[in-house]
Length: 613
Image 1: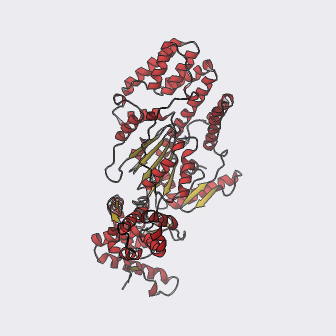
Image 2 (image 1 turned 120 degrees about the vertical axis):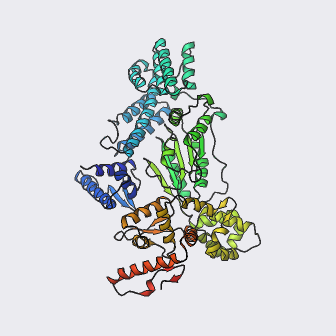
């Protein structure tokens, strides 16, 4: 395939096999922060060449599919080493659970044999480095499982030669040290087993200032006492309720909707292999936090080692990741004196503690990936996070963008707050309320609270108040259900240039805004305008809408977000801004119409319902 960008494009598609990869993610992977103006066209060419190469090799013509806004490569489990690896690991674990250890060790060997050097070794980028680190950790986790099965089968002497070079290269992996100590002890080499412990302890103290973990210390005491030792992963562990962290906020009893997304999250997070990561993104008020809390409780049975939760306050006052790790380590039973001071040391200890656990870790309001990455566990745990911005640059992440609820789900939510009888009695007004709320869960709850405080008031009167755009945001801000504050925090993350474009776009009455309109109403060059639009989509204050691929994408506002942006435009841009916007669009539209037919004044755009003059 020749060129580096084609290999990078293929790598990103394979890393997200059977998932749609947005073109913007492919552009970021290939060019990072400095893409050329023709980046999207070059990606299209890369995909075309990849399709030709696959077709020449005998692959199906539709192996790489074009999806809305991106591409997807469809592969069966046996078509890709990564998928085949996970399939074999699932089989091996099922065999261990059934007690067939001989077959399990063969399945583990088959999975590990698929590693033939460093993944993506032909490429050099932050993406490939992160992926290589992920799969190196994944390989070690499975290797340790296989070694435990081998020890349980009595292959002590044979495994010593496997374990010694591994422990020498990775002296701080306590599970490997424990396995070597066990193999030596069961091979009647007690003194050497104790020497392994001493060397491991000195390494941990010298590098991290830490004593070995409780399990390694317990094994050391058992060997000193001459007690019976059993490989750790095949014996049943006694659990006390206090050992299992359960940090999720209280369950939301009237949670409504998102059924298909909940089922997809279960598929993403509860399969074997790991760590598995899913992100829910969207602007303020879309119900991200409520959804992850509800999902966490619904998936609790899949994570027997507990649930960790942290609100990172990414859009207000970000919590330092070392403080989050301190809380996690404390919840996992690490004494305060054993928690190291630095971020890197805490992250390393957290990965060591989670290597053999199956935890669900919920990270609410992630502000950026650099803070996020230090909180990733190892082993079979899963991570569910929320963010106001896209996190697609994180390798192997499944991201789902939240917007408003479907109409039926929105009505159900309103009825859960107001009462089914009132909603049923004025169904048309109830539907108008959820439309005026932009179908956003936070706004619908606020509307419900307003109506519940007026039990004798009709829904139609409330509709009349919401119809007035000047008062709508205030009507939908009640106590902690403050729609205005949530949208303000999303807007605060925009750069001055993207913020100005966002405000000017909100002034036009077009339901779907073509790319050329954005270029018309800004003084930025076309390439710069496209980058600003990408920022607005990335920050979830604008969405990509269906459009004519020959003339570029269309963009759209959530109705309530548009109302908020117009409030800000009136205050920040002045009354003349709207007339300037519509006159620019009208002039551009006349020029565009000249080539195709007579110009019709009825097609002139409007601002707040006023035709351009």
